[in-house]
Length: 112
Length: 114
Image (cartoon, rainbow over all chains, first blue to last red; front, side, top):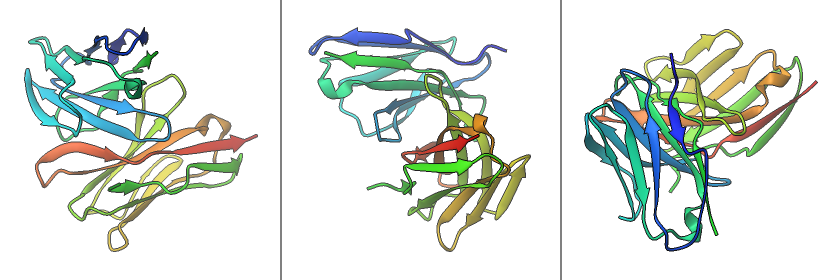
């Protein structure tokens, strides 16, 4: 069974640009969550989608947004990139909301 | 304000010995706890979990202990193996509170020496 797939694996952008990251959950999983991980920090929750609806949102500015499609694939978008947005962005999916999440390998975003 | 704290950024253990990773939490609403393991360049992998109705859960070499009164949990790995070298994240969530989003600690880097 294929795991959670995130593309691209690595991305380099400059300040002020915008970026879109993609996540394909495990087949059948309808809940998709996004996290940001920076050096020395734990995983900071960004948002969670279920059946195309955003159910939960973390404490991030409005420059961070996301969406989920009818096939459960999800994208997150960051506009007006800042140096502090450099991080590993992780996507996780779960079959049901009360089950452990399965993570992708992440997208490493570097802002120059 | 960190609700889940892993106060040891790193831990070094000899192969064959026990590794004990600690985690403290402050939110009394947390009732489900998980441990994830993360290798470099890979996403976290679920390891083991425990519900607040239990005080111990065991899976092979891995055992998680929960002390609700102290708001403390620990992960024991016995015996430790070099392949266990990774970053371990503790996470907690409040399922009964209607939120299934886990709150993560900052992780503890475990190094197991051969």
